[in-house]
Image (cartoon, rainbow, N blue to C red; front, side, top):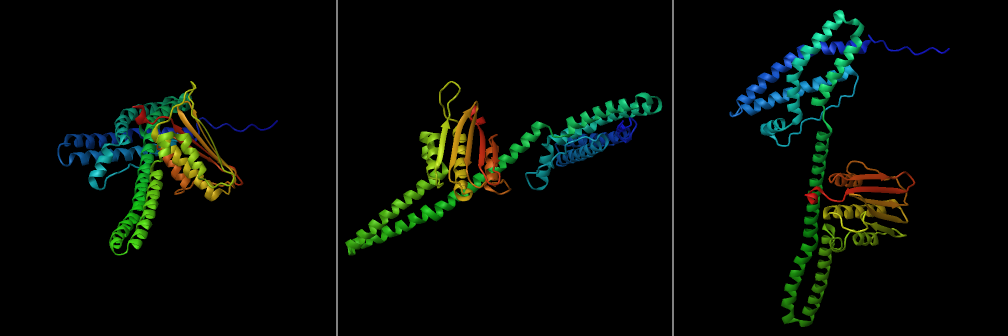
Length: 388
């Protein structure tokens, strides 16, 4: 008969860590309550003066630090995953930015509430633990588990980032990425205008001035110069059209996503061509267009992906599929190239991921070595602004 593994003792190290944790709740609770009560009440009382708000922010910062200590104690005592909170984000430089960041931080205020509640909970947990250590040995392990679960619930509900705050943080990061992308796009447009169309138009104005002078002296040469200027006008118009297409293509505005994706696919240099399949019918058999912002994101995402296919994949063929699934716009770009596409910081795929995430979308890349590469994009059919 095989030996059965020994069961862990009910009175083992884990229980004694819980006992120690619960006994320390009282002295730590007293210190935290005094700190929070003195600094926060003084800060609130002096809020109308120049020192009030900084003092209040200092109290909240201290409570946040005590909350970090409580999370570390909980992890050590309960062997449980207690999520760590992010560092507070200070968006403005100087003392004013530091004060505003702490006064508007939800975790700082929840940490202050924890410091206040820890005193009565510390009295309860200290008293029960001490009594059980003296007279309650038959039920001590089970009582410790119960008290530890209450303590863990208090830490988890007040001191750990909840799903909503995590989502807010993610959206703030996505918004920052979108703002950076928009700023880069504006700089690119400014550079293209300055170095391209604007320079060409300046040269054209000079050529027309010279041609005007030549028309009286040498009509034939003046006519030749006017003809050359006419060619420059055509080139300048083409550059402006290309620039406008990069901002928002007219075919997308006028004819929708189907025609726009077909147009960008036609420009792709994959030898075997790109197959485009678009089905945006709703459940009732009708067809409507997604929100214009979503259309734009879909168009430019597919355009960049097909550019990557042309430049890097070595593919012979590619396909683009777009369809509607309930209130989501689904896109899939697939090629038969060599694969190995990866998302790493600063890469084009990472930038696309940030752009898609900013509108609550999903961007998934499947690209094993040897191919094929499949990119799936999920976008909301309507943005929040459109819903309002």
